[in-house]
Length: 640
Image (tube, rainbow, N blue to C red):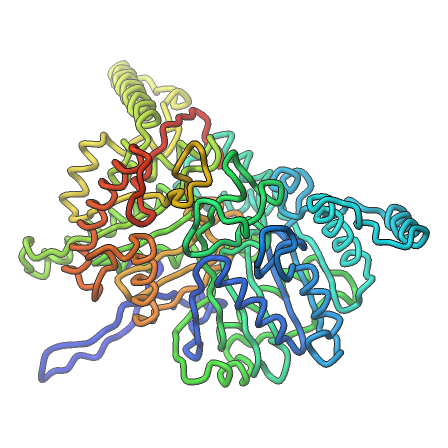
């Protein structure tokens, strides 16, 4: 039993001498009482921006009382729906929220719109997460207005799309921040370095480099993404919400087809462009929610809002987590999807996301599917292997034949680490799962560091032994310390042998799209940037939201995920995602999810990856998006 399990009694049928218990995927311990499990919910997983933002647009237009948004970044000029090739291609965030606040879709009755966004001057300047925020003064706005009056035409009439877009954003933020619209409020929040220090003090199992510690303390972010509509209206009978990974900046709109170049995604100057044409493909998810678990989405918003709001801006809303508003259950209809909202919120000491990952992983016996932007949490990989050892010990204690032990299939889908200082932690994590050679140059450096450390340990042990013989106390300040999580992982051969003995089969892949349309005169492959934060286990559980698999998301940044243990939803999601990535190739969607089916799918993926690697090297079209993960870079500096 892990520390996340809630002990309980299971009645035994004395006649049959048997008992029936269910796996405890969600958190049920007393200390998790602020994250209750709710049964009356209707959940829908939306894949990629086109699908997600279309539903968000529809739900916000239907708002009758309130719209409450938490985001990491906000680009008012981002279009939620897109037609055509030139900005604006459709309804923008900025126009949508202004129109909703003004009552355009509510018979003229204003709707209260609140947006809470992360903003920290220096980090935000680098991240460009709020383009146009704070760049205009009242004096400059008056000058624009005077010029329009005198000329008789719009100030932006003669501007190019790029200039019009920048002006649109600057004016939107000026209006939203200056109180010009009473029904629309935009506030920003940042993170406290003191809270970060307190939170990291509890992460003693993770050795940090100086650069990592500095980065975590100075560049902590509020990374949650939620939307809540009409929670406080008619007892929640019309409430709908979202917990998601999708950011409200233009890069995050893409289709599930992930074309090499799609003009609807936007031009390079509209977001984080690269050397290839237009904005890159993006993979992500959103969970649409109707039901009782929205009480936690509401509480998270209100608490965060009130930490930065002043005076009349504060929200007076009570939350009895044991008794959600009755209308929420009505809104869920007949659906009974069990769900739980979990967070990382260091101001409140909340690390339920970390505990949920541990809890769910402890029950994995067939497969684990992980699709994540940052796969840099080596502690999780080590924890998985420790749990598997416990599972095997229990199997043996029950007298079951070793040959009948089912394999655990681990599918990991990750992008190329976006910054060079993320290379070491990514390498350590994939190496722990048997794929260190996918980062060959970093793997060589890590092997050399391991040999150097082991030699220093041997010298230290000889020194200590000598001191003991002479009756002297050794100087403990000279004891060599492991500089990183890569120390002690073992050689690639050792890890391969360990995984084989544990019955753990692993693969690590990335997603790439091919230029079928022939728009590129050079490189024919383009990486699909994985912004996802998804884990599915055994067709019984999934979690998604804002949290990455790294220490930052587990212990520092403000994050929010939803967990669900509904088998039907989990299986449907697995089938859809597997089919999408493999282009519906034979035996690649996992079938009925049984161990035999997943074993066949795992082997089919390995074969598909091998074939696609060869096709990519030849610059010929492959099948689907799956390509083996590979990164030739190396770094001696570990950042976070």
